[in-house]
Image (cartoon, rainbow, N blue to C red; front, side, top):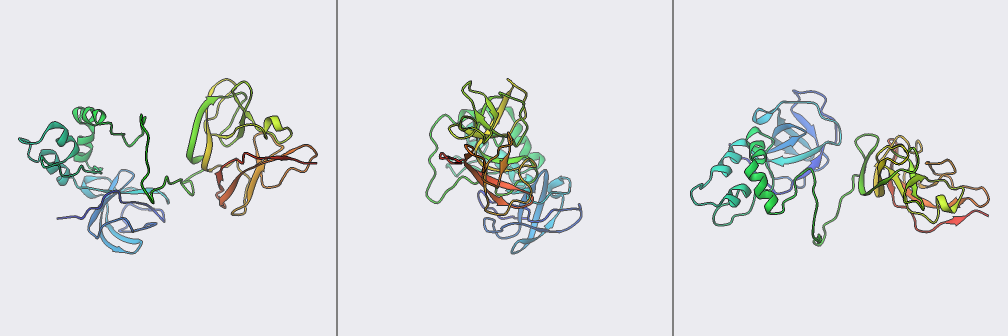
Length: 299
């Protein structure tokens, strides 16, 4: 059966899939996908989409010998190719295509590379092949799990870096981070500041030196004093450590309780008032963390 394709199609589940036999799923957006039929992957399950009715899709579960499974709301959905197509790409014109071209899945005429590999056994075999991995590394390709970029990245017009607007669970985040050393016992979700010893300690609105004139970050990796840690400098995060039931759009400030944020401006004399972010989702609480460079002290 011929299936349709479109580069870089991606969305998320708008409702959890709670069984392994249901044939209807609800997605956040269908805009980037081709006309049915086409193949998608959710976690490690492949599905054949046979009917698209807006954001409600009719699917065949456990497609291409994958295992049908349950999936949580918000899980990423990716457009894939079939095992047969992957096999065809891998073997096409083997007598006239260079090793590099075969790795990229393009013909000797230079037809473009495949942007996606199926979650099928054939697709994984292509990615797992040691020679293919070496060729991709030589060409500077980054793996899906991440890597190091050694040059500038230029974004085209109308292209953005998308932050996760609502984490799938507590302690999930998306944004700009930095590694460092803990200067106290830190828990995930703690509001921290970089002290004069270049260590991250718990922020406290009681003094400018611990909340006002300093770099702030949210702890992403729990650590004891002097252990390595990781801080969110700007981005979105959902955490059980944040104040409960924040009103959407509400500002958050450094709290007089060490390591906490508050929706109420400190009112004690000489205490620091510094905005650190805004609530973008209420219950479960998700904030956009973007500390102001300015602050005032209460008089």
